Amino acid sequence: MKHLCIALLGVSLLAGCVSKPANVTPVTPFDSARYLGKWYEIARLDNRFERGLEHITADYSMRPDGGIKVLNRGLDVAKKEWKQAEGKAYFVEGTDAAYLKVSFFGPFYASYIVFDLDPAYQVSMVSGADKSYLWILSRTPTIDAATRARLVQKAKSLGFETDKLITVDQSAP
Image 1 (cartoon, rainbow, N blue to C red):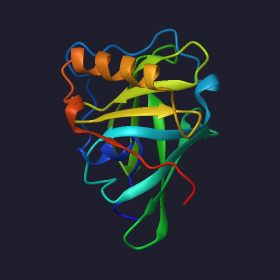
Image 2 (cartoon, rainbow, N blue to C red):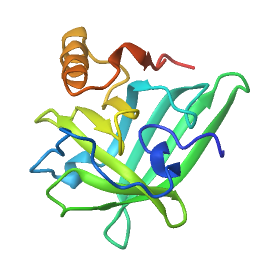
Image 3 (cartoon, rainbow, N blue to C red):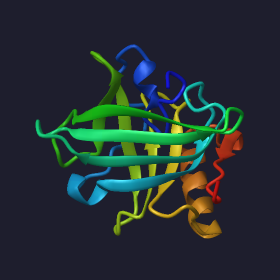
């Protein structure tokens, strides 16, 4: 389980680094109720928290304290076993901006910034505190080539190393 902090939220190991990368702007207005539910990881920049994992999903739900519960799940292909991690997220600059701090380990928080989100809340792009963290997420296990190309081009224009994106296997395990 320690290797799992998956799908965009594994960045909580960054020793509490809650900040925004240069020129990455959180989506506003943001409706957290519409963002809740299941998201599939389509692509990511490699990180040690998700290395070796496929079929990655993140499920978001409300917490009684007003925060967001995060449940990340992925298949460790080498071990052929499912891993999951539960975390919590809270808004940093008010509930109408998609800038949250997330934690899977006690008091350590890291940035979770939704900086691209389609109006129907079906596809999003997320950054961590710096440009070494990038995820493309979807409500469905796949997205069309045009949408992916648009997202990759936007990320590239903002300085992300999109040539290093890993496509996540979302086919039936």
